[in-house]
Length: 337
Ligand SMILES: CC(C)(COP(=O)(O)OP(=O)(O)OC[C@H]1O[C@@H](n2cnc3c(N)ncnc32)[C@H](O)[C@@H]1OP(=O)(O)O)[C@@H](O)C(=O)NCCC(=O)NCCS
Image (spheres, rainbow, N blue to C red):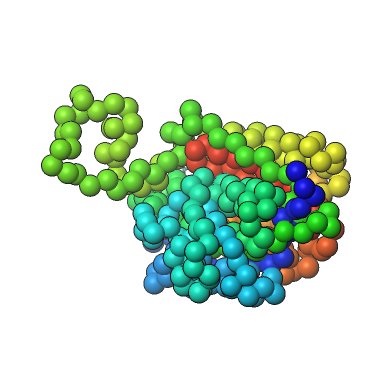
């Protein structure tokens, strides 16, 4: 393998305009600001009212391309992590390609890994770059979970928000860039967090319950998100810690070498548990969940963009991103910025 690495040279993000506070949610479900804040760390979230997934993804991507200093025609691959696209097809990536006037003919694809979607997309992009099949790649994480949550279920609807984030990767050979990617899935635990598709009946549909296999009966459930929060919580802490250790060990690094840990923003208590296990000081872990809630595949690129713009990441810094989500999926990406 060559010494080419994928360097992040631009980031961007976009949040829908409508801000919904915990107080606003008190009028929707039987909950309180106090419960949501103390159990999750979330105060507000942004909810798409008029914006589509392609709208917010395109704005985030446009910002990332501008920040990178490249022109739209320089992009030669688009990879998007999402599980709440506007369309089954065309892909979000193809629609962003068209919206931003990227070169026609370049490959564009979406990756489905729920809240780990952005890291999976980075992993795909990194492999294209290191195999020298692409030089400049647009990577997007976008999700509008307001579309899939059950707005009558207080145990889930208060947790999620909508948004998009993006990064531009460039092939470079100066030692900086993505150092390692470690992606995982364990489909045996898929039932802990899932959202069925809205599948239409057709003239040959089998209606007899007895004839449906296990998955068949899930397919007939309402197409809203279902989650077993307590079980997810424990597995999330364990899996993300494991993925951080893989990132450190594979690069000969120790926890104290981390400049900034950018974790998926699902719950402040999950983030705190990771911080405590690694014995990281507050300044070395990025947390913005109180403003946006869990934005699924958008959470890490939004956090990355904010961290960079706040001056918390500089050239040569060691940044570790770690995610966990439905699938179950999880993984880490280590970067020398
Ligand atoms: C969902 C989560 C916040 C729940 O927190 P928790 O402390 O485990 O709370 P529990 O589920 O044990 O519920 C405790 C009580 O609060 C109640 N409750 C749940 N949601 C509530 C809400 N929005 N408002 C008020 N009460 C609520 C429950 O009904 C329960 O009441 P009971 O004791 O009378 O039965 C937490 O489990 C979590 O964050 N899990 C991880 C989820 C996650 O991150 N998923 C995405 C991964 S990408």
